[in-house]
Structures are given as C-alpha cells and as structure tokens.
Image (tube, rainbow, N blue to C red; front, top):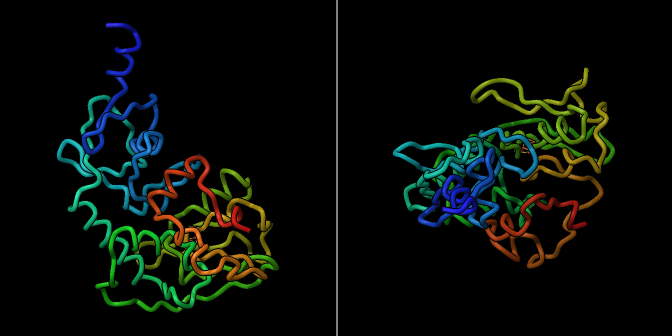
Length: 251
Ligand code: SF4
C-alpha cells in the first residue's frame, strides 16, 4: 500500500455512508463542511473556536450522540447525521429556541436573513408546538450604530467569541445560568453605548438572528431577494464555507 493510500485510510470516516477525508485535528463539523456535507448548526462559525451550545449538530456514532462541532474526527468513525430521528430532535430544539425568546418574524427586520428562521424552514417546522415564554427583556439602543434586542438572542455565543477572538475587545459575555442565562455587555454601565464596539467589528455583524442589528439600515432587501429567499440554509452554509457571509456582505 502506497503512502497516499495509507494516509487516506488513516484519515477517513463516513457520514451517512459517504467517505469523508479529514485533516488531523479537524472536528467532524469541519470535515463535513469541507466535504460539502451539511450538518445543521447555529452556533458554529468557521474560524472561531467552537462552543457546542446550540446542539443542532448532534450526530450519532458508535451508538453515542456527539456534537459534531466539538468532536474530533477519527479514522473509521461511522457517523449518522441526516436521519429522520436526528432531524426530529433538531426541529424540537429549534422550536424551543423560538418559544424561549420573542421571535415574531413578521415584525422582525432580520426576517429572510435569519438563520433561526431559515433553520425552521429547513427542518419543516410549521408551528412552535411549545408554550411561549414571552420574555420581557430590555432593548439597548445606547450605541450610535448598533442596537441590541435580547428578546431575540438565542445565546449562541458567537458575538462573545467574535469580539474576544477576532476583534480583540471582549465586548460581550453570557451571564447567569439555565433559564436566567442572558447576554451582557462588559462595561461598567452594562450599556452597549459605553463599549468600544465598532459597526465593522465581526461581533457587530455575526449575530445569526435579529438580536444585534445595525441602526439606520432596515429592510434593505426586497422580499424575494433576502438571503434565505434565494437558497435554503444548507446550500448557503456550504457555499459560504470559511468565512460564512454576514449581513455586512449584503449592504
Ligand atoms: S446576540 Fe446574537 S450572536 Fe450574540 S449570543 Fe445572542 S444570538 Fe448569539
């Protein structure tokens, strides 16, 4: 056996029966995306350290359920992802995210560009199923260019990681536990206007939902021309691998 064949054998797993080659150190998610296989996700973003908190990317291997974004790829793994059972669980998780916040799409400027909404469409979610929490969470409009609507936050942690790892600012954090977990701003006042967040920072552009939004800009894309009007979330995610596009790209 030649060196190349050996290397392939040592770095190959299967996802839904397809052979996937991976680089040492890659996660299952990284290997899947590189092989153009979509594993649903909301809190994963290529290039940022994973947090494993949305749980949409849970796959099954060797009788165990693991989050693909935080599990290292290993040779010989037989991974099941696109199964009716796992997609049903993903739909339930998406429904839970919808009822935990105030995701009233007809009144949200992010509609059509929102990953949570697009995930609902992708998974065939026709209603929320669970009772709505209807949380009352304060809007923070203190920043001149950005506003924060925590009632739409899904605690994906992307803004936290983007601010810390890419912007080098540490503007955001998640405080509290369980149902009390919430996004905070790392300033003495707790106000976004007292932070050094810039409208061009990755943290100001990475939010997958309508929680961190730009002021003085709204409804720029006509219905039919919004991101997920054009393509479903799986095709967009595979096409925009490293880095995923953000709303900034659609100004
Ligand atoms: S504000 Fe947006 S990016 Fe930040 S944690 Fe909430 S949903 Fe995620």
